[in-house]
Image (cartoon, rainbow, N blue to C red; front, side, top):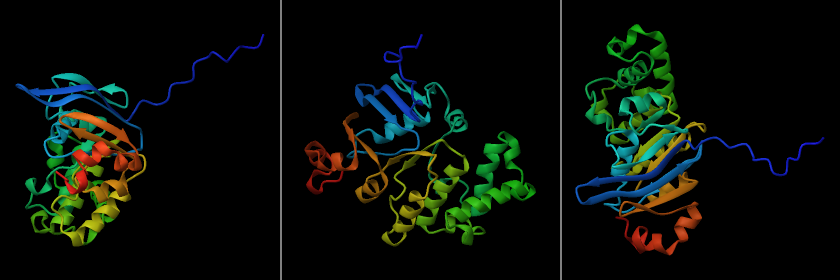
Length: 263
């Protein structure tokens, strides 16, 4: 007898790369995030926008484990990571850019990249061993720096780099963690106009198998980069859609694009 397949359930697709379910964070009586539901498809380029005070920083700190939610869950490729520490989330494949000029400013670019790779490979105290004593680490560090057009400044101290190159190094260090999901927190903020195009080009070249969540005020960068956009207002998601849908939505134009009001 032939099996009737008409009523069979389709195979479930892969879990989203990153998902939040009813994410809330309260600071006393202040609701910093309100029932936030996000879902990032694997390999997608997703942007999060919103005016100042919308809750973007709080949400990023919740995703990375810096803050714990008052309620709700965070899933990384279907695994509940809500209770994990930031370092545990990095090991699971969730990385973010961070302010490199606050970390090891006296070290060289090559040493900094090597330390990030050593931490991923070896962890613990052994990652403090001289980068030069690990040829494989040096080789990988050089390759990453070449990808981000930083090979010409490998011997420079981080503190001496132009700000645009410091931001590129932040992204390179995040990629050195070999993330499955990368959070880019305003990568072009404060970068002089002459250096911005380089950052846009390098972001466009990020590996296709890495899911990226971009948090950014620069709408030119958002529209050039993203295939989906979520708009955060007063701690909650106002809408999610394609670039065209978000750009044409009157609510977004009022509260964020706001006929020239960029928050």
